[in-house]
Image (cartoon, rainbow, N blue to C red; front, side):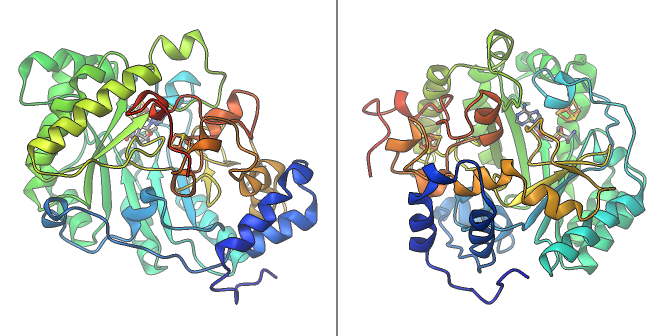
Amino acid sequence: MLMRQHKHTPFSSLRRACRTAPAIRDCHRPVAALTLELAHVHFIWRCTVSKHEASTQTVFDPIGQRYEGLARPSGLRYGIIEVTTRCQLACPGCYMVRRGALNHGSLSFDQAVGVLDRCCEYTGRELETMDILGGEPLLWPPLKEYIVELLNRGIKPWLFTNMLTITPSLARWLFERKVHITGKLNVDPSDPAQLSVQAAMIGRNERVARRMAAAISVWLGVGYRNPLFRLQNLVRQANIGFVPDYYRWCLEQGIGTDLELMGSGETVGAEYYAVAPTPKQVARMIEAIHAVRREYGLPEAEVLMPHVFGSCPFYDKGLYFAADCSIRACSNSTVTLAHLSDQDPIRKAYESPLICRRLSLCREVVGEPCRSCDRWERCRGGCRATVEGMGDPYGGYTLCPLPYLGNGKPKVG
Ligand SMILES: C[S@@+](CC[C@H](N)C(=O)[O-])C[C@H]1O[C@@H](n2cnc3c(N)ncnc32)[C@H](O)[C@@H]1O
Ligand code: SF4
Ligand code: SF4
């Protein structure tokens, strides 16, 4: 059984373990045991929001601090569930679209509950959070029933939605239960000239784009604000110029923002850059956002990847449960680690070589630019699925814009 009594395992132990990392690249069992032992510790949170941002908060928000790199060290704590592959949109750059994975079936309620049971059997406790996505989760009939099940188990639900089918009564029901919502928005909706870009970002026409933007007022109408309500902006070449306007609009509405760089478990090459911006373009975008923040008297937000101002909370603490019952490390990873029908599927997935390599990743072995980066502890190298897709699981996140900001180099800590 894992050693859950180690509540305050110091970080130094993890670092010490990491120094041996070159020898453990093949992830032998003792190393897996060590890293998993380090997994079950309590997490620390600090509230680092600025005064302005704090004034928009309606509740204390430990769940949202996943992105600030403060919930370390590791251990299986977060689930991501693809409840359905049904979706009305076809967003360019969406990993589901790129893989032709949309509209190929759904999980049943029992299968989705089975995921919770299997995780609980493995760790001896319930998951802390469950991100519900798809496809479009509002198109999954048992959604409310599943949210009730999560809440009864003490698991915090977070819904990722294109918002197209939200109704005031469902929004109110979700708000009363403090369910985190991340919708999507890629432009400033107050500028009609940007509507055609929004349409292109969801692969549909302007009428659908208008419906999506209108859905935002449904959430606002029942009381949703930051941090319970955010809008995710998957940054692509076609909309990167509109990101500062989008950012300003969200600030003014009291809506949280989640800027995400396009991940890709497949090789990053010409096909990727046909849609995604380059690190240099992202650096210029960040400078423009800093200027917007200055307009509002806000301090510069810290650049962390791949959410631009947030790290990935899942890279070694989560598992992704797909609608075909396969288990992967995260949404962008293409590697199947196990199937729900396997004997002891969570152990098979979480103790797989891929997760063990993620657990043993440390600054001493990671490639540049991350090795020289003083943000390493909070960021841990951007989107690891993307780096793994590029061929070297210990590689640095070469899509990071940090080398193109400020003095041109990540600061050496
Ligand atoms: C696949 S969608 C499913 C839920 C819902 N349909 C939606 O769009 O929010 C989940 C989240 O993944 C994001 N996403 C899609 N493709 C991505 C990619 N290649 N890299 C990073 N995030 C991506 C979407 O923007 C969305 O916030
Ligand atoms: S709405 Fe979500 S699942 Fe559907 S295509 Fe867009 S990002 Fe992908
Ligand atoms: S250089 Fe690496 S660790 Fe530093 S911010 Fe960029 S992705 Fe994160």
